Length: 245
Ligand SMILES: [Zn+2]
Picture 1 (cartoon, rainbow, N blue to C red):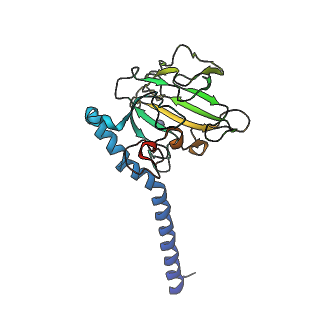
Picture 2 (cartoon, rainbow, N blue to C red):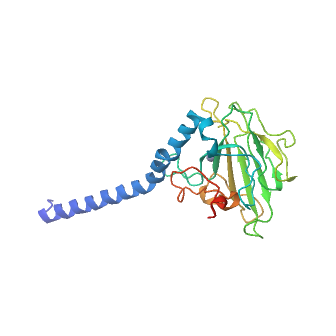
Picture 3 (cartoon, rainbow, N blue to C red):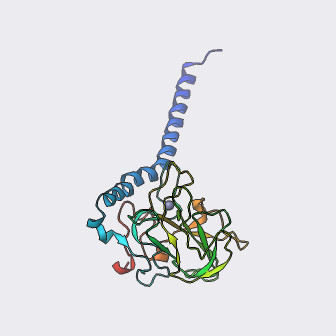
């Protein structure tokens, strides 16, 4: 069987169209990642290089921006925000606050009052249930704090919250632990920071899987900061309330 000239050119057009679609899909998935690499990552490097000259880029634990309901859960530079991308197809579920100190030094405080749970196998993580969302009263949300252990898994979480802690009330400002570099792989620790996110309820009174971006909520209005990567493309995070925005 032979293919006619017309058939060949139709096939060519098809292949070209298909290639075009692949390229578009590729750009769609890679764009947030390229944006993060070029913007936020470059700025984080700049900050690491000379933290003292960029003190105005940092936040302080316990401070509040305007009349936002949440207080800052830790001190340092917010290197990555909600929706940043670390590899093509990935979207960051929360914010990363880099204290600029060694692991085990920079305190982590509860951003908002609630009921604290630490599962029995959680070395670096706690989650706090907030029965009524301050910005959407009546719905239950969760605040998730992680990387509070060293690279070997030695926990920096406060002894007040040992593994297996269930529904212990923690007031806003309660000391939770210290920033660490735990990643689960001792040979490949993360840079010392706190990862903080707001997680949706699973509808049955439990928390949904924090690793899924779609299960998390834009933290911007809760902290009063510009924390949405699709709106704050490469800029430093600022207090939106103080800008009158
Ligand atoms: Zn993170």
